[in-house]
Image (cartoon, rainbow, N blue to C red; front, top):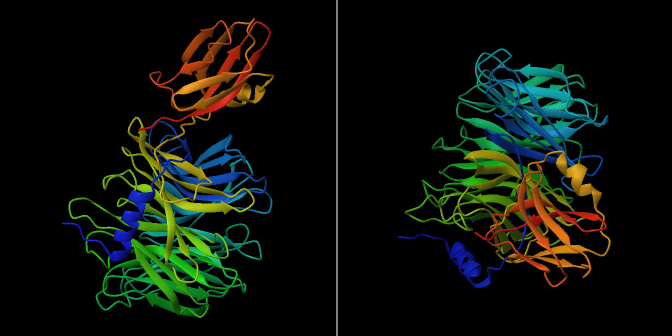
Length: 503
């Protein structure tokens, strides 16, 4: 038996009536084991820096994984930072000297089982220094900000310090990572800080989960505002007797807070998206729950990030098993566009593979290019391993299932071949199952070759006259990013082309 709220019933109807086809690009990065993406930031050169974890590269079981690409998502460098056991990167910022600061956790070095981990690198990802914080138990850092004095502020959770099962952990360092102060917030229950921001008035706020104030000890969404010394300005929880978690927050130009996360209010086994709009004093302006529930499938939904989109709407970035092509089995990425003043649903888009999981953890919006760029995970896309993934799209129309993926092995072959574009009069376009060639000279013969970005030959055909201008690709297994090389009697031409396959 299917149980849905009225809102979700309307969303499901909207999907069935308005679904259409559109395109998003999903780039994947990694090796022959598992990678994850956790945070993405715009860099000073208009490119992107991404951070997460890698089991394919580095020194241990898992290392911090940093990937740098340019504004066109061309690979520039990657770095694995860590030691013998486990390191994980949760957040990254670019520093004033064009280097990077990363926070996360380690159980290779430090005082305890796990310690909060702070890493400073140069502009190419080379390690400059590393610091650990915590005690003999488990301690983690989940988010960070660069402070006005050039130092760093971290938030996360500690099991070594504080009053309870887990307490929110605040860490302040100088520019060299030396500890200036550390504080804990919470009670006897499970209290965790997940996301951190600088506020418009020069202070800070974190969101998370607080079980100490909940009568049933199940956890409430938590918002704490504090000053640069770690002193609390307000401490608010939101929820009911079920479990609620705020995973990320942003603040608007008007000083309002937007919290995103998950709740089990509608079901004790499946989560739904939880979104709060909070006034500057911590009071609720509006709150919404969006999600679906199917008794026979795992229909989990939860939001991980928020985009301050325009003056009328906001975008909630989430994972869903209720909607999209995952059919309750795999996560898809979903963008929920909501009315800013009411939280009411406007429209949304789903992106993903019907046979493999796809989800994002953090998203940024480039207003100049009108592009959403989200980092996350493509599960089992190749060899049953997960890759760090980057979804980029300008598509924010009515619910659209996008089942195409772009695989990019990111070898240097791309730079040496695809950047040699010699257009001339010849061009190539991909239309449905065909490669359509234009500008061919009737007197010339041509060799058309499709190469993977590693240089591996996939498909080739000889063309003897201009009448042969369509190549059928349906049965060629061409799918992803390819270099197309067209050689004539007089010249050769290179094109970097994306071939999309309908699942």
